[in-house]
Image 1 (cartoon, helix red, strand yellow):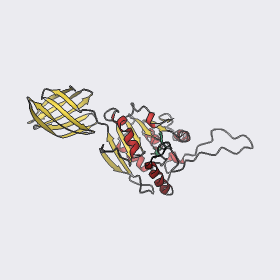
Image 2 (cartoon, helix red, strand yellow; image 1 turned 180 degrees about the vertical axis):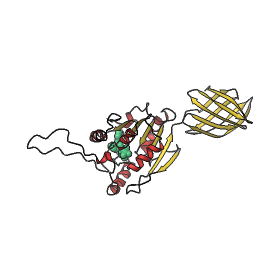
Image 3 (cartoon, helix red, strand yellow; image 1 turned 90 degrees about the horizontal axis):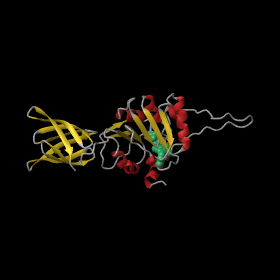
Image 4 (tube, protein in one colour; image 1 turned 90 degrees about the vertical axis):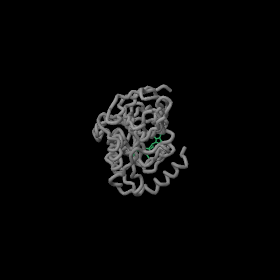
Length: 292
Ligand SMILES: C[S@@+](CC[C@H](N)C(=O)[O-])C[C@H]1O[C@@H](n2cnc3c(N)ncnc32)[C@H](O)[C@@H]1O
């Protein structure tokens, strides 16, 4: 069922259909018919997706190749990554990630788009690293992902958000245009070229933050973190005296903040933080363990 939002998207798609060039190699792939036509029978017609065509929760509009490149640049995607594109359309983002050496997975509900993507990946020589599944993006296990790309809708991003926040800290999420509600992006970028469209040129990057909310024990005193996504505030209780923290920041599993003239920095691993506490030019080891 389409939401009002997707209807808006669909309307935009219709407006865009004339201007949004389907310009990537993936989109231009000319798949060979899978079987030879019997003598006297017409050749099977090749499947051609149409911009704005129905999708399960979102219509199909391709991300411009310039923005695909920008999104993967912002994610700093390398051959070490495991990439998922949720609602992979004609497969262009997955194929581009695979060309950069990543193991890339496209999740797409429309089986014809899955077939089209597989043929395009084979044609581009990356079928071994680019895998496509006919599946519902809401039911897909993303636990192995280190990079996730999205071109969905704000309400769908919001629905996915709890699952995304449960991914490994440090996982990079990049969305074409649409936001994640009050979870602010860590970075925003613009495609160098819009391939003829003034819509959908912006990429937003989020880095899944470690979960630190709660009370932690450390030699410096009990630490209370009040976390909102990648931001937090809180205090250190030293012998009953509270010192408030400032400049609290989480980037994946890296945490930094200041309190009482000391700069804390460390790495969060589950219920332990290890790092350093620097004050007055002296650096000491800092260890905190979660107590609740
Ligand atoms: C806006 S297009 C984006 C395509 C591609 N990611 C890109 O950026 O070029 C959204 C895609 O999501 C697919 N889709 C919609 N709902 C889905 C669902 N529940 N599960 C999987 N795919 C879905 C649509 O068929 C469509 O191909």
